[in-house]
Length: 144
Image (cartoon, rainbow, N blue to C red):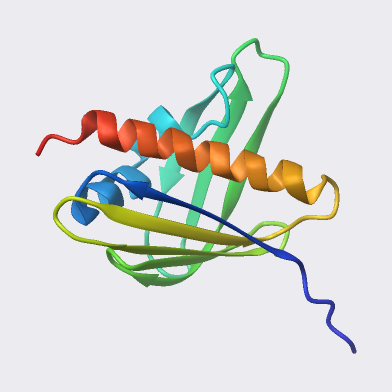
């Protein structure tokens, strides 16, 4: 049986915050609900995160006007604290996130398999917008 390789899209950002803070803000539900949105008219009212291999995460994304909501969820497949997160989304797509940095800056590189419903450019801009929201949150809350 032939396997069709999915298109991979990469987004990245350099965050002016130490890697330990970036990891905390990325992985703790109380922080995820503060930054996980692609635009100001969306929010993440709920997040759960069992940060262990073969365990689940779920973040509810919702339009602030109540018109739309969905759960973004999956299962962790590989973790290396402060370095790597890999997971499989409920639709079977793979995601890999690399973290590298020091006491002042952290680079986050996120690569995901594209889905076939929306244009690639839309997917890339949406994931980049969420990553930019994370960057803004992490830098605003960084207390060096």
